[in-house]
Image 1 (spheres, rainbow over the protein chains, first blue to last red):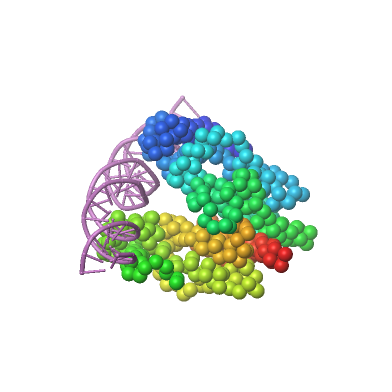
Image 2 (cartoon, helix red, strand yellow; image 1 turned 60 degrees about the horizontal axis):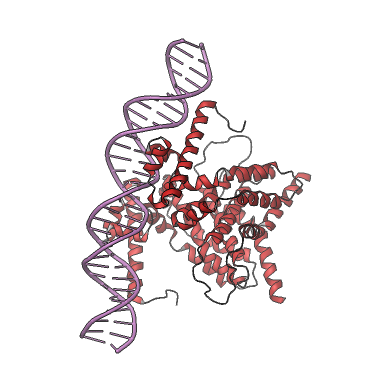
Length: 215
Length: 215
DNA sequence: AGCAGAAATTGCGTGCACGCAAGTTTGCGC
DNA sequence: GCGCAAACTTGCGTGCACGCAATTTCTGCT
């Protein structure tokens, strides 16, 4: 019951989506990201250019989608699946880390970091966890604080985005002042630090929910 | 020293910016938002269409900018100006509330809520506080936790965005279930609730900074 | 089976965002 | 004042996002 809706139609749709993003990534790697037109991607996937835009709202989205895959729903699923006896903050951190630790082809990363437009699109993918995550958190809070759940989900997404941004950035000036700016650090460390800043808020809301339950 | 840089040039630039956003708002109110071309706005402000896009990255930005004005820098300034003996969370909430409580022309709000594209652009303005706010928070934390400051600033922006979203939304289904969904509430209440969810995180980081200072 | 209607694809047209390479204005040291 | 360099404006060209309406492809029902 994960997919909902009837079969053959949805199947074809996913097939098209996958074909599009794979074609996009392949072409971008072959020719460089600026030498790929939407028209080319559509043709390689065997659909019309107009159809491309029914699936992806920008030229860059298909490329980064090939790299990020279904990251968003997986994070939410992991949080939802986690039992109630582990801290929400911990479950969340673990899920996020796992989804960003998958072995990556270094070529793909260079592709993305090399183009400003792709970097921006990549950062935007962090926002995709927001809705599913809000639902998962909301369920844990017992539907009493929908707004709170949304805020926390949005904050987590923002934190992830911030960490990715820090990690990706092409290190502008070598060392502006003597401020020990922590060059970039490893992605897992950055993600952990970023999410750690939100942990108190997550703990607090979880505590409130627990009190409300025990009443 | 608020403006930096030399005089006449910057002066003209701001004049152009103001002229553009005022023209945009006026035309949108007169004709409806969909009947205003970038070309029209540029002409009304006495610049070329190409110049319009040197100031605003989208057609909608100029219109919402006329409504939100310099909200972003004001919030950051208020936080920076607040003395160290008030809770960061309180200073922040007060500053945000003040900037969103300014008396608004109801016509302007209807204009924005009426168009999906304008709604989206309006929500995006919440992100503008992020950078100045990160700087202000970073200063309060003593430059030791730049990443943390960024994360919190981004989270605050996300919270504000979430509150605005909840407030703006055209109330889809009347009442999906018996869940008492809190129809929309007043904007100040929504903002307070949204920011309250982040207060524990703000308190915690502030406490850490205090300990580090007293060492 | 077959058919009514829902859903997806496609072509077309329009307005837009933005890189680039002139041209024009402003700031500043002499 | 003078001239040069930096900043801003502008026209042009290109690719793109997306509304719309016609067409094709699927699905559930009888």
